[in-house]
Length: 448
Image (tube, rainbow, N blue to C red):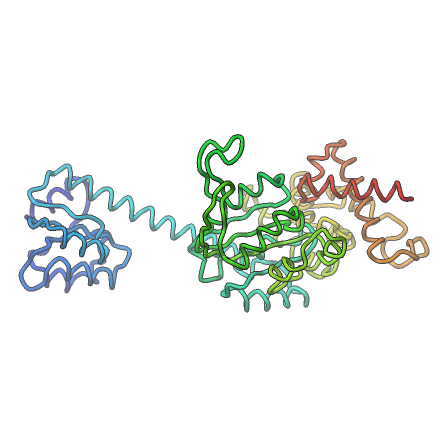
């Protein structure tokens, strides 16, 4: 039988090492480290289950196929519980064995590929890949390293483009939930009724268009992490339901009458100051405290200008890897101009600027003329550089920042040929957020 199975494998181009004794197989298992083990179940002294147990111990990724003439439910169940890949009875058909062998090897290949992909993703979201050596970023590193492996709910706060989702992914892929799903959703991208169905799922017939049952993202993220981006845009009725989920760790699908228990870590992000929304009655204070068990404040890029050269170098290397070309160089003057600019779009805007410069530059060297127009305009404005009387002194800091934001939005829309969709993409915000900011701008203008 050993010779027959060995010949069947070799005909398919597989290399085999054959043993007619269970003990000899055990003695050589670690030495040969095979990709697949095929063993009879019943043998003298050392049987197939013994080999299976040893294989699970020293070669946990290697599939084991057991062959036996004694087909009993008990032995099949025991073998599967111990981790056997499959179970074949004698007499077997050659094509049946060949198919089982190929399935086992294909499955092992998929497992190996999945493991490699997970390792790549984990490498991508290591804490060190959140670029920055400034004091503010060092504080962020220290905090997220402490909280990554907890189940605490985290609220990541910061302007658009500061890297909130990157921090959320780093928290997940450095936690004990890293092998489970990471599910992200932008809460501002969907209207209230669709967002509720997306988050919690729905029952067939619960509303027009609900033609079948649908599980929500909380269920998809079971045992893993859900990331609620722009949670500040969530309507109040949904805020109430989210609060109940955080309190009771149960969800209810739209149109259903029963609750479903969940085991999901919740990470949320906001690009607005929730304190102001709470004062205005637009965000529940009790939900804020449930979300902000541990708050993480992401600094704006203008608050850490020392990190700009480091980020520029990182984006140049990233562009080279994506395009398969040698990394572009940058003139010192160009770097000075980038460091001088205020970056209302933060790190995302800087990355877009470097990508643009790499595409436009000649001879692999980024010159000032390759930089975005708003960077050059800012550098030539009278108020740039040292403090001067042209600065709008007399405004509060919040008023000044809002004023600069409004101007920048207008310039970006103009730069994109009046396309608000392109402007929103360049700014790194959703269309809903852009329209909300334009509405605030219109209200402010009307008040003036």
